[in-house]
Amino acid sequence: MKKIKIFSPATVANVACGFDILGFALNSPGDEISIETNVHHKIVLYNETSYELPSAPEDNATAVALQSMLDFLKTSQGFTVTFLKKIMPGSGVGSSAASAAAGVFGANELLGRPFTRKELVRFAMQGERVASGSAHADNVAPALMGGFTLVRSYNPLDIIPIPSPEIYATVVHPQIEVRTSDSRKILRQEVAIKKAIEQWGNVAGLVAGLFSNDYDLIGRSLHDVIVEPVRALLIPEFYTVKQAVLDAGALGCSISGSGPSIFALSKTLSIAEQVAQTMQNGFNNIGIDNNVFVSLINKEGCRVME
Ligand code: HSE
Figure (cartoon, rainbow, N blue to C red):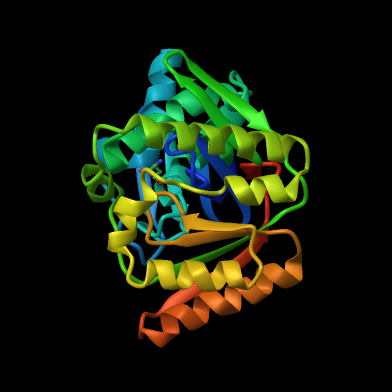
């Protein structure tokens, strides 16, 4: 039997203007799983955390992602996966994505790396399909590849790594649960051309700012005029907290993935820490428990711990 332990980072999807196409990875928190080959020709799951996870392989994001990879390889090799999750499901920082990415990354290592990290994205996305009803790649791509990633196209799948300057993320998780499937259902299916023009400008500006280390351009581009106005309704006092965060000096602030977490990007650690305090005060003031964390961008993605 071969066994390894994998760390897989939390991720911030959408990054304001890039719904379903932009994401970045955090150094912490992250999920841990251990994965080993077995002789049973099937996927066996153990949950060693206090979080409830789907125990049937066909409903579990990690097992579905892993099975899609094994089917592609036409192998009946079995794997036993033990979850040591650290990212709370439903928090908006890619909990299911981190576990799905860890599963395919770990199995790929044990099988002698038949796939590159980028090639693994396609399989990890299948986990997102069962977890949220949509096979989006904006969490699994940065979880696997690290850094900022762009999904240039879903069909055919085309993932582009985006370099970035040193930049600090602050994320607050107010303790309310927002299910990704629910927060996708409330989105409008049509976009007015005026809004689309604003959004295209911001996506292009953000990517250009990341490439050219232009913090002001990054800040000017961190606006979402399409999805945030709808989802903000699910997060109490979202706009109050956001304004306070911008006043504290953040480059920009928006909803992390489908929420309820909120993220901000800052140029320095001291601003990022000030932003963390501001976020915490904002939710404390309205009596909502919250966790806050500050992290540099994780450049590596999933890694073998032991
Ligand atoms: N792009 C996805 C969404 C990310 O916003 O629904 C979910 O984490």
